[in-house]
Length: 327
Length: 251
Ligand SMILES: Nc1ncnc2c1ncn2[C@@H]1O[C@H](COP(=O)(O)OP(=O)(O)OP(=O)(O)O)[C@@H](O)[C@H]1O
Ligand SMILES: [Mg+2]
Image (cartoon, rainbow over all chains, first blue to last red):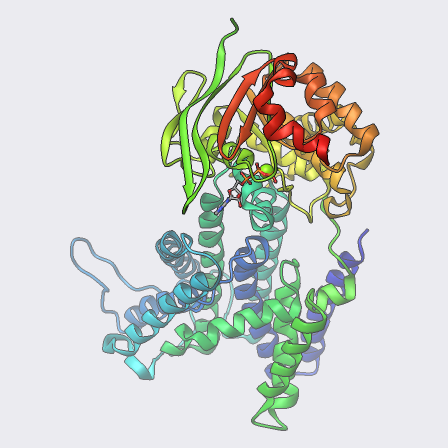
């Protein structure tokens, strides 16, 4: 088996052992940190499909993260005050049910990705980066000026949403939920990468002429990848909002897009576990260095620079070596 | 006379003041190899691009299988059955040789938007890909990373990918370049048999190959076809000798 498989397994083990240890020693704070890692990694898994497989440098994934978050915030806040979202043309009520919220978050962000992708994927390179960035910022300023859901101040949700059969307020239970979703997303993206779609998408990243010459349209591949990518990042947004029980325009800001991209780059662009390694490292650094200095992000910046200059494959790539071709 | 598979009608293309294609009309008939020769910069690749759909002519039309395809893009023309190889290899360099061939087979079969089954375990696609690799002599390199192939081998892989498409006509832009004498000879033998499957419009600088293979030869100079004819006719054509073959004698 490839070395990367062992590294992924070791990372998985660490992500299971740390919360087990925290749980047995009663450190709920660590459980919450691990939950955060899983949710941010999920956002990165989404971006990695566009960026890693498709080569689409989206600097606007905060749009999907934010839409997921606001889908949760809107649905839960209406349920909280028992005021329907709409009464016409038919009654739409809020909900506190996670599965319903997740579905809405994914559909809404997939739809947004379809619109944004259809416009931005006609460009490439720096224009693509700028257009995706612009869409994200547009939504950011829109939510700032949207008083119904807290405007600039954001909106608090008092009680965490519910999942059938679980008490989501217990940190360990919410953690398990986040882990399972991350696991499913990883499984999905691993299969996607090896499926016909993944082969064609990664070929289009390497050489679009080749793909056209065999009768496949790169634009369609990229658009579908962008939609799937947006939906997964949107789901992460809904979970992140639930973790914090709070939404705010910050979810849409370019800082958020940048952070999601940092997870992917730190961990390894196009590597299955790249976003997991990246998010874990980021949160670890935040936890360790954040206590020492307010300027801890400077260290992250230096690390990022190092990765970009000397270790293109990120953490996973450095440990595992060059990617082994599938099959 | 054999049926016309592919035809250009008065194609013109200018880059600023440079006329890269100047009213080019030629055709490719069932069962033949039609070689397109001409000095560097004559406009051979530019013509191939316009036939393949990568570039729109300023004037003129392209007909394929009796249809006007001028308005169709590369993808649509490929799906109709134009199998093209590039002068500068256009392959997925991070893929293995086999993956590149499977990509071709996948394009031909369709079903790209499938998200779960591993494509490299798809028997039908693998079989088609392996067969194509074998035909060009790359079967022992199936697991090699494409970036590690020599230039000549990349050219062979280009041909193999085109084969997986089961095209109705081949457009080959210098498939022999970089192959070396032995490889060149083997590919010549292979193309000789291939014309029975689908006619080939062959751009090639290797004159031994061209004169050995071509049923007809067109000579392109400064964007114009100055002569079309059999190997013997072209060899004895005074204008061709002056414009093109003469240059080689002098060199
Ligand atoms: N996109 C372009 N823009 C401007 N000029 C171009 C472009 N493509 C080709 N040319 C010019 O058109 C002329 C024909 O180029 P082309 O590549 O078709 O020649 P060729 O016959 O294939 O030459 P070679 O034997 O070297 O491959 C050249 O002078 C080239 O510089
Ligand atoms: Mg050329």
